Length: 393
Image 1 (cartoon, rainbow, N blue to C red):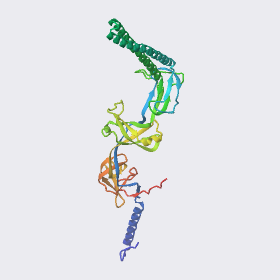
Image 2 (cartoon, rainbow, N blue to C red):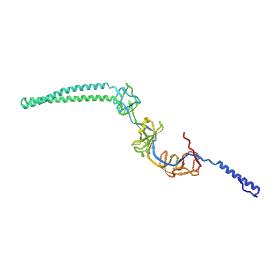
Image 3 (spheres, rainbow, N blue to C red):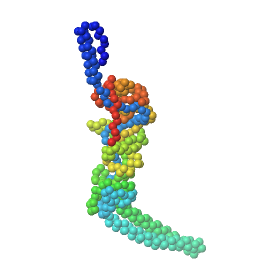
Image 4 (spheres, rainbow, N blue to C red):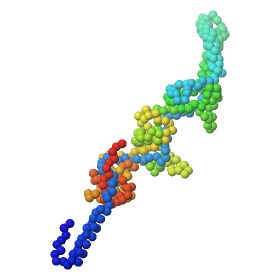
C-alpha cells in the first residue's frame, strides 16, 4: 500500500493519519475474510413438458379378480371324489368334486328299464291299433256292399278308436319314462361341482369322506371350493367424494403395489359406484374400480395385494412447467438472479399434480429456480451457488 505524501504535516498528525489508514485496512480485511459464503442449492430449470391432473385414493385399495366363485354343490352329501388340489389350474366345465350318488344312479337305471318296458308295450299296443284300424276300413267297405250290418261296423270302428287311444297312452308312458330319466340325471348333476370358468383353485374346505352342505338362503357356510379367474385383475379403491365428479369410465390410471416396489402398472377406470359410502369415523368416499391392462397378466399378480391408484382426468402437453415442490406458500418461487442472489417471484399456475405444476405467467423457459427450499438460509437476497450433481451410483 502506498501512503500519501504527508509533507510538512506535524508529526503527531502524521501518526494519527497512519493509525487511521491501518484501522480502515484492518476493517476491510476482516470484512472480506468473514463475509458469508454462498449457500449451495439445487436448481431446477423451467422447461416445457406434459402436466397431468389426477386424483388418488384416500385409503389403500385392494387387488381383486374380475371373476371369483366360492362354490358348494347344489345338494348336500358326502364327498366321494375330490379331483383338484389347491393351486391347480382348471378349465371351464371341468369336474372339481363329486358327492356320493349311488341312490340317484339306481333311480336312473330304474327309469331306463321302465323306458325299455314302455317302448315294448308301445310296439305291442300300437300294432294292435293299426290292425284294428285296418279292420275298421274293411268293415266300412263291406257295409257299403251290404255284407255286414251297421252294428258290426260300429263295433269295428269302436274297437279301432279304443286301440288307438291305448297306443297314445302307451306313448305317453314313454315320455314319462324319459322325464324320470331326465329327473334322475338332474339329481346326479346336482351332486357334481364343475368349474364355471377357467381359473385357479385358491382354496378347498372339504376332504374326502366329509359332508358338504350347500348354503341355505340367509345362512353363510364355508364354500367347498374357492375358484379365481386370475386372467383379469382390477383394483377397488376409495376416492374422496370431492374428487368423484371428475371421474369417468375409461379414464387412464396408474397403479402401484406395495408388494412390487419400483413398478407402475397402467390401467383404466372400469366402474364408478353410483353411491357414496358413509362409514362411521371415516371420510365419505366413492368406490372406484381400475382394471389392469392386459400386459399385467404376466406379472403373476395376487388377489388381495394392497394397491394405490392415480386416475388422470386432464392432460396438457408442451406447457411451461416446474416441479410442484419448488412452490412456496402463495405460489411463490425463488429465482436465481444474474448476480448469484435469490429473487422472490410470484407465479400463476394452471393444471398441477404432486409432481409438476403448469406455469401460466411469472417465469420464462430456461429460468432456474430453487428446489432445495428446506436448507438453512435459502431466502430471497441470499447468495447461492448451484450444487454440483452427485455422480450416479
